[in-house]
Image 1: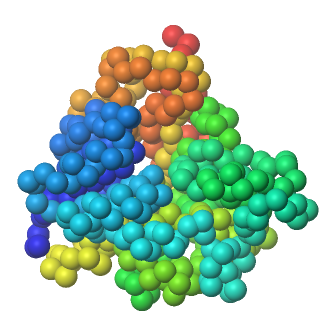
Image 2: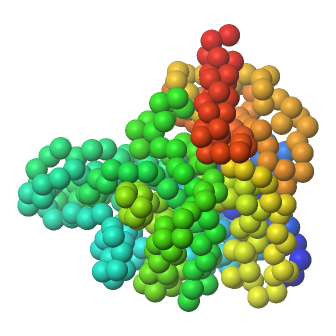
Length: 382
């Protein structure tokens, strides 16, 4: 495969990965739960009914369109399904064997001996050690289903679908790497927005990223060690992310995301990193050299606004010019993941994504909050 080639993208939401694919010179075809208007304007997309998600991806993968495939958030928790699809067409990503081993994360694997990681508790009928703990679903994604644990001892039925992880107080960060099975390169680190009230996000829900962050040498080296140890253990290939809590200058890895993650595009827009081109090069020996994107200035912010009440998405708004007059895919849009006019959005569900750029992390956060307030007024108070 040389030059441009088809790429199928499956997941709950595929817009960010599809735009990254376009920037990498690929021709994406997508299937997800939303088929957002801005995605539909750029490439073919199939909207998957919720009652057919994600099993219908097997059928889509069996179509006549040639080319490899990748997955986005949610499918990494279904290694058997990934394996079935990978039998039908080449997978540019981490396969089912590695997926089955990489969960629930670092604390239970060999890498934990050389990394500072939260404890994990999966012993039924035995009192949990003193401290603060989170109950996390084995099949969750984006923070869904996470809550504080106030019980004494979890029962066996609960631990079939969940695990307990030590709660670490600190700053939420996400590191992005590209691995080739032998070595990992740190692409960059972003601040994670999680459960932000001003975005109406539920507790622990991912709702945005700010970056790339400037790291002091000891912290950068600590993030690099995390990637190296995970490669030693899992032999990961392609893009993968690690969610961390930074406390006292030390990153505590809390979850591995063995796939394209939502913060990748922030690093692309902010640092000019051709992330999906680098990902392709791991799997396609004939891939053309990755072309560095134009590096932007300052810090890029991405935020997801959630619905504070049920909403029929209006036909016009601040996002209209982005939708009707989209710029080159290399340019950061003002809005993304834009629903179709009239689409019904339930309370606490995501509405759309918006971006901004500023000279500092603080200024970027201030601008994101101002945009969120304007959108809130437009959508719910007019």
